Image 1 (tube, rainbow, N blue to C red):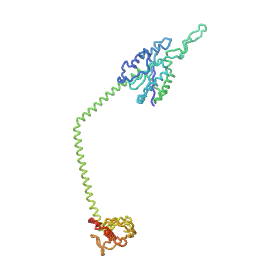
Image 2: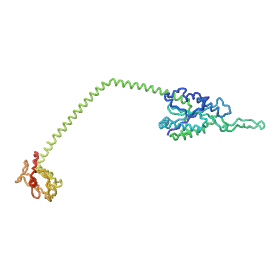
Image 3: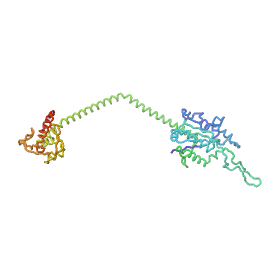
Image 4: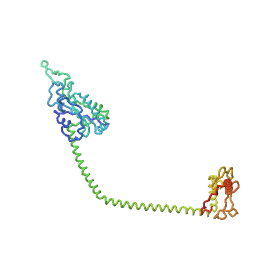
Length: 420
């Protein structure tokens, strides 16, 4: 939450210089001329009054003051209302600037009296939007200072001349009391709370500076900024010179970059080609490696190829792996359902059929697979005591007699190397 800014100081004489500044009859150095059209008068002058200085005089002359105005009396108070640049930008960006102006003018009139607020102008052509208001300090309360003393000739005692009570007077001191200044800060902060603004720190060591001093300080800061800008311009020129030098060398740099890019691309292609050759060699070697391993296995364990032949037959018939393990473990298994004949590529129905695996030596009269090693255990898979292959052939023959159009399927050539 930001702070509400309220600045009040006394004007001297007719304050014509401030009138020229507020009404822009002169061009302040800290104002942007292109934004001056955004400035706005918030309090209109009475008929026939053309400027702020005349409005001050008109208020004093029409207020009903009976006492003569001294040449050194303060005729007007300058009031400046604003907030931090960030807070004022937020108020403007949310479309509440007009509402903020109306609430600020209302606070001025409620605090100092409507007729005493003779001017109020919104300035938007400076860094931070703000209001310049002018208050003529006319009061009607009892004087704070005691009246001039008089001597009673009869009693030789001091007495006081009686003055009219609550007479209209021009008195800036009665307005600018310490209590009043604190009250002004409190009430203005209350009016600005709806805009996210709060009162400044009570009892702070910070002190207000006069408006002319404020603008003198702003001018000094502006001159310092000019020096900073000149330094930045010099650095910018140095950077531009370096950029120009690089631009002049761009063709040379570009050629080096292209050459380097081409070399890298060539190397990447070579690496890719070698990786592809390596993968191909691995693919070419793997089948031979696997075959060599199988040949070695069958040489050391002669029954391996026979076991593999029966295992492939069982799998081709559609038996589960658990059933195949039981057969090789010497168990008889019962099958109901369908058995597939790899030779005929056809399913045949079975009911409570008994499957059993038996073995005998290849030296017996039982035909054995070509290339099978001598003295190997020849395995025989039977269904209800009959060789399973013979049973499949009988079933197919029965089917062909019932359906003459069915022909024996062509069998693929047997792969070499495993002897099965």
